[in-house]
Image (cartoon, rainbow, N blue to C red; front, side, top):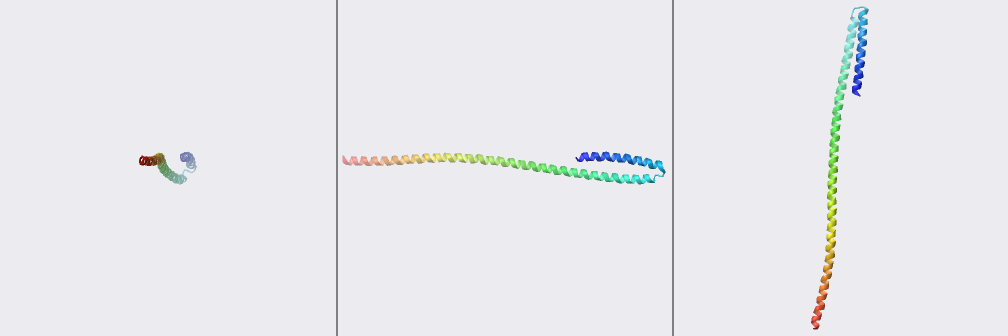
Length: 142
């Protein structure tokens, strides 16, 4: 948009210069003194200097905008990298949590199995003790 405005300004400036040249020719053809011409040239030089200063300000502003844009793009890239890193970290934590849950299930299964086995052993020990008592009683009767 800035370039289009600048190009339009350039075309307008060229048309104005052509008009100025025509006026200068008309003045020279008029009285021939050239005083009006000197004044007109000075006005044109002043207008041209103002135009050049305006163009320089536009170029500086455009350069500043480009620099700001690049800085914004760098910041966006950095934020995207941080977000990707956070997602990776979240996946890693979720993976570790899944492993923890799996390990916990395995431990619960082992605990339950051990508890059942302990109950069976306790029952068997009680049965062995009862059988020993019966054997002892029978030995006492014999």
